[in-house]
Image (cartoon, rainbow, N blue to C red; front, side, top):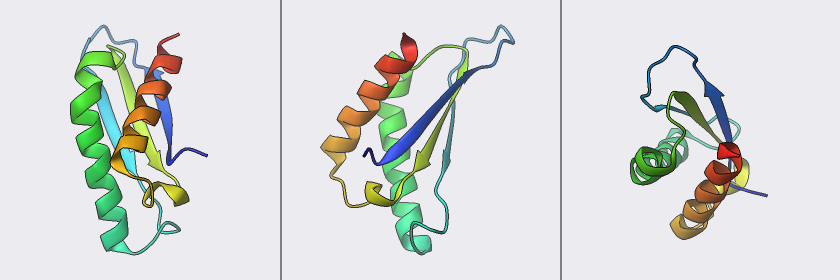
Length: 88
């Protein structure tokens, strides 16, 4: 099971910018753990969304329970796979 869920929704407003949002629920852990997960998501978004993100769409990363234990390389490959699948 991946460490996050990726939702991609085209805005349809003619703007080609890539939108991004993050959410991690209180079920995942305390504030320190949730903020750590969001910091990892922000870095992943900075690295990949400008190049392989879908233009004119909003991308939302939703943290899952197993995401904080995963290493950064695993999350990186999961995001690239998810973006490739969303682009199809």
